[in-house]
Amino acid sequence: MLFTKRSYSVTAVAIAGLGFASLAFNACSSVKATHNTAGVHDTLQRNPVIKNKYTADPAAMVYKDKVYLYTGHDVAPPEKNFYEMHEWLCFSSSDMVNWTEHPSPLNVKEFKWARDDAWASQVIEHNGKFYWYVAVEHATIHGKAIGVAVSDSPTGPFKDARGSAIITNDMTTDTKISWDDIDPSVIIDDDGQAYLFWGNTVCYYAKLKANMTELDGPITKINGLPHYTEAPWIHKHGDWYYLSYAYQFPEKLAYAMSKSINGPWEFKGLLNEVAGNSNTNHQAIIDFKGKSYIVYHNGAMQTNGGSFRRSVCIDYLYYNKDGSIKKVVMTTEGVQPAK
Image 1 (cartoon, one colour):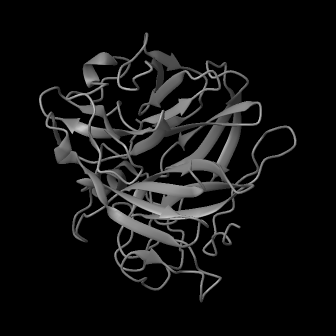
Image 2 (cartoon, rainbow, N blue to C red):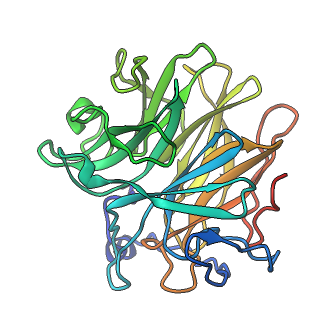
């Protein structure tokens, strides 16, 4: 039986005999209210990059010489062994090291049709507007759903772009679970066509209309992704498309490559191992100022960090000459300031 991050408690996983990773990472000292100054005085411990609150399920976007980091916000108290998330957070940086926190630009309450659960998300810019695809619990249709919000600014505020979900659980029937419609990732291809990827235990994708708020055609199931669990991230580098995802449980990251956004996808192997003290693994991959980066989360915060109180980290990503990706080394040091 496959357990996923949305379907169990710590106790249930222990009973199932899966266990949790016990890798130890050192967390860094606290930072001032809205800036991560880690690395200015201590070049050895920049990860996690946000230290004044718990952050999870990162997505990153490069826009006008800045990186915008969007995360979930874990607020589960220490005694609670499950996710509690009600809003999304936004941070920006010009160097990948010093981060400015902006007021929360989006809360699950913005989606009147949703019940709660501000889970994984991604923001993308299109024609001067910013579209935020999010996973939430639907209030009237059983299961998880994907919504989309829009703003004129990368830092918001964001407003519900549809007044309804773009994906609901009754639109996908390959599984019998209620949480298979989560973890949206979006890409705009070179020809201007936008695509939405998502899914838990099954990976789906579909075209988006030019308005970025409606599907433009059928939902397609992607085959050939071994041990696919969740957290798809779609990106292009050079002539290759990359589909990375959470692999097995506890989760590692793996990836596949293709010359076409429509596949076929060739599985290439692991990107990283289980992230320290966290049974989930969730990634964003970007290029910025001539370097490639992987953004992910672990449970390494010194105070009560763990699978339900996670923290975002950043490390370098390296491509081989044939386009394949070198296995990521997860570090406490993190990255140097980008110039």
